[in-house]
Length: 281
Image 1 (cartoon, rainbow, N blue to C red):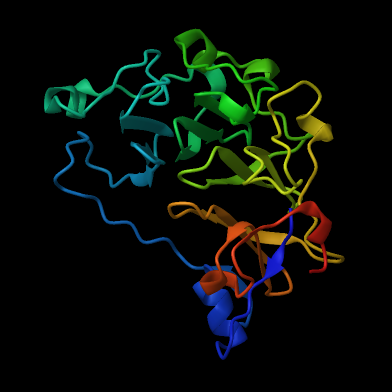
Image 2: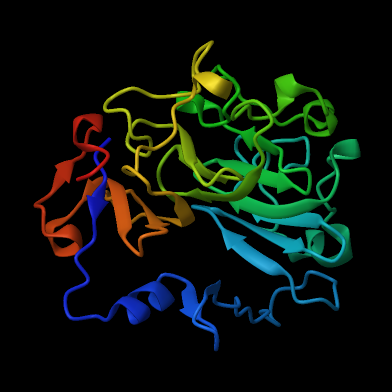
């Protein structure tokens, strides 16, 4: 899928990088801006810690980083809340919240360091750098090489490779992002590359879904071609009603994006971007 360098207009390079999530420290080095989080006192999560909140299309998850555990509530048609069943939680009955809302049980997979709910599915990154996705498997968005729905307790606790998203030999995930209304997920890896799977709108290989068939994941899953002598520092996903877009910040202070773009976003006219325009574009 095509990658586009964003025109920042009159914005200075330093401002552009800071806006993208980085700033310069007193020594002139680029450092990531510290996240700001404000807990919502109206949501009863029964915790004295301020959790990190992540919102999917109809699902919300919170992560307590000090204990590495998550709770999710909302739509659960495909088991995307991680409770081993597929009916909604916290929608009509507030009594299931607070202490009555259980943590997702991942067994011996380890502590969770990031939770990313998407469109009828959820993915988590463990401290080991491994990823597990659960919920609806349409278009391969669970990254398991098939389109089956997976959410039962046995699967959630399974530590085997067949239950985890395979992104390459010895690769570890630094960050996951999704486009809220799309069926895809992208991962920033420890070698500063990006791999995506699921819907072809969110991947960058043209009109082919990835992760819905055998031999598509792991080392066979291609990395985003961001250009020669460039590597990825950070990644973000965004989506409005029909414009799913992923953007990456590069070591060259460029931001490149792919997906479905509107002209008011990228000055390209509305178009689906394909792999023939990747790389140095």
